[in-house]
Image (cartoon, rainbow, N blue to C red; front, side, top):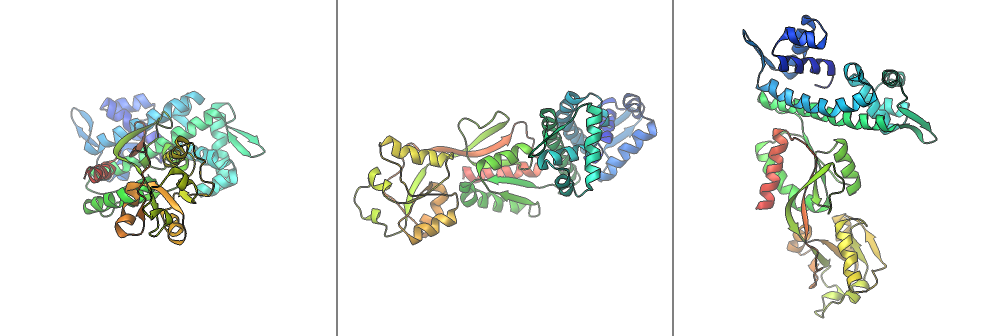
Length: 389
């Protein structure tokens, strides 16, 4: 749907005005051009977008779905275009904006062209055309590469999110015609990968066995950046207090706390009381600095005025923790729900000492204003059902 922005603007004019003639006048094009534009969109959608009658032209249910997504896309895109140059709202093309996004990320024409699968002169020409319309440079040459100016960064971000909306439109249109399209990309933190997501995916697959699902892991900062760029639909895991930035919102699913674990036969499992001083003398596997788990871990020693352990392996990998604890006297500090399967299987033993004050919210993080497709909403409901159970 994002291949021709001009056709989408014409489509919205027809939907708003209820007339091919008035839409042609408003868009300063001919009536055949309006008819051709709407016909191309209908072919792409695989269904009629308008119902024609003697009273006028009105969107079908599929047309209404596209109207909603197109309005959301242009609400994101148009302010950034107007900030550069008002004419860009009429002249900017999808290809030009895709070139801008690729250049913003790659900071090099050759790499941007490779990312888009286009020739380098094609990308250079697209950027030049935008700069000519804006009457200003969009990139500054530095020793590190071609760095986007602040207005160019804002436009690239707006275009990226607008294109996400138009991709969502394809899924909405498929849903309206009894088909399935689109997909779901989840940014998953460690707890969710071992406890919540498998159950939610299994439940979701009962109703939608074919919808593509991608589960990405990585540092929280990387997942958050992907969410804000529109590459990830939502994050699931430990929530931040306060929210990390104003353009995301958080939803609590359940509360969790931390557990201290060791291999069976560990010296600390002798039955004697375990002091914080004793804990500081062993090597640990614990989450990286800056995570909620690590903050609670460090606070446990600070509150007791005991030096933090000097032997720490920072990792969010359950596999690494499992092997280190199995092979040595390492201890682990980890979410109680995340480690529940290992405790049930006898892989780990729970130390008879908790970590006070570690109850923390686990939940979802979304882009502010994100509107899921029907399939995405179904998956979110599966997640909420699983955690309620």
